[in-house]
Image (cartoon, rainbow, N blue to C red; front, side, top):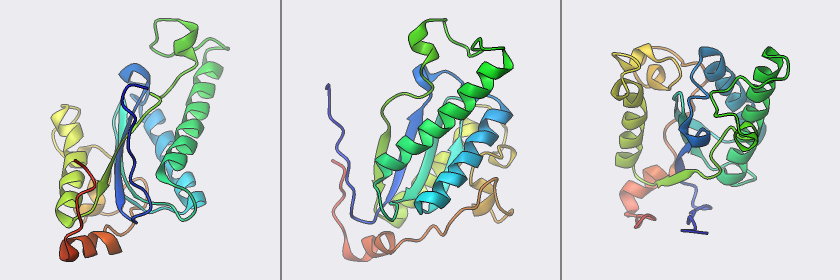
Length: 193
C-alpha cells in the first residue's frame, strides 16, 4: 500500500468525507442518478443511525458531512452506501440497454465492474470554524465548477437548509455536535497534521 490512510474514529467528531466515481467519470451526471443517490443515502442514514449535517452530490464525486454512526464507523457506512448506489445504478443502466452497459467507459471488463474509486478522503471536523469552512466549500462546489450560477440552483446539496429556504432533497440534521461545541472551548488538538 502506498500511503495508508489514518482514520480518527471514536472521538464523536463530525467527518467531512469525499469519494469519487471510478476514474472520476461523471456517473452521477444525470438528475436520475443524483436523485437515486440521495434516496439511498437517506435509507442508509436511517438504518445506520448517523446524522447528515451537509452534503453535495456532484457529477463525479460526493462530499458528505456526517456524524459517527451509533454502532459502526464511517468507513463501514460508506462501504454500504457505495455498494447500494453502485448496485442500483449499474443494474438500472444494464436493464436500460438489454444487458449492455451504457456507461461512459472505454469498454474494458474491469471498468464495467466498478462504479466508485476504492478509497475516500476523511477529515475530522472538530471546531465550529472548520464546520463552517467545509459547509461553504461543499455548497460552492457546483458554482465553482460552473454547473450553476448560484448554489440555490443546485438541488443536490444542503444549501437550501442552511440558507433558510426549506429542506433540500434529504433532511439535514442539526449541525451542532457536542464535540464541535466543546472543541471550541477546550481547545482539542487538531487530529490532522
